[in-house]
Amino acid sequence: MGGGRSLGARALLALISSGPMSRGDLAERLGLSAATTTRTVRPLIEAGLIEEQPPVEVGGPGRPTRLLAVVAGSATVAGVKLTADRLYAVLTDPLGEVLSSDSRPLTDTDAGCVTALIASVVAQLAQRSGRRPDAVGISLGAAVVGRRTVVVASFLGWRDVPLAAMVTEATGLPCVAANDVRAFAYAEARFGAGRGKDPFAMVTLGAGIGCGVVVAGEVVSGAQGAAGSVGHLPVDPSGPSCEIGHPGCARALASTSGILRAATRHLGCDAQELSLDLLLSPDMRRNDGVDDVLRRAALAVGRVVGTLIAYVDPELVVVSGEGVAVVETYRETFEKEVGGLRHWAAAPAPVLLRPFEFDEWARGAAALALDQWTVVAGGR
Image (tube, rainbow, N blue to C red; front, top):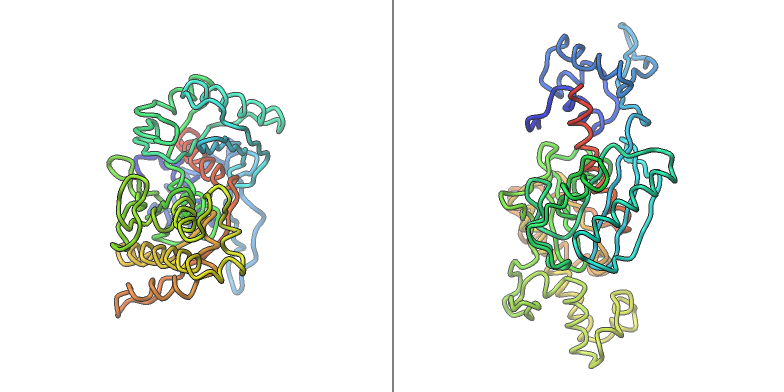
């Protein structure tokens, strides 16, 4: 978990990840002696980053336990999520509480124009809240290397864009960037259902199919920033092809565009006339063709999730995104496929289905910024 971080940064991150804990528990979490832990947290307390909470009475003999906790007002971070046509931004504290949020249309996808818009939105969030952020995190559907360079973001037409450096130059703030699904998974591991689960995995369904895996508190990015790119994995050889010609891949069967495209062939209408909500209505599902499209989508997601569980053996998998309603409606089909891919000796891995808002993607970017803040603040 250290990843080259100072002891102070590791202590801050542990308290953010697990919540208030005693010195003894923190020492055990960090693998340090009691004396080294005390030396590590002392300057963080003096700097106002960590506080000792009032004593907690314990049963039996012994002194009351004093818990250490990150001070909510010790930092503010900004998170920005980029889509093909919109920017979503939030300002949060170290505990993940959203202090302020904003959303803007993305009318020009030139990297310089997007950077200027990010700087403007972050400045306005800071003005509105009265708190200047300590760091900025950016998430987008892209391969990102070193949390700094966008290698490729097809939906924006970007290649080899040094986005983090550009935003730092425009705002004067430390900046990190990452794939949106991995950022979302990181936030969920820090503040959501994945807290305390190791490994933890998330699968998102929407314009694409993505996966994020968090192991020992660290999100897995891969050598080229493309870990979790499961959208084009083949799941049904007899299925339709995606827009770039992969037959029966997860994206062709279970992405929003793939579902709508398949449904139009059965209904003989334009995809612009359809939506997932409309297809999921009882009247629409009475159409055998529509029912088959939706059921195959749920089965495809089940194959992706079941395969992921077989490879990673996570404590929990969260499935989210705008397409999760399809899986909820056809949950029996989904669960049967997941179960069929499980090794006979392995216990079932819990799978949680939940809806989402785009602000949560931005909150994922804020979690990355918070990670960056611990590196700087913990080095005191």
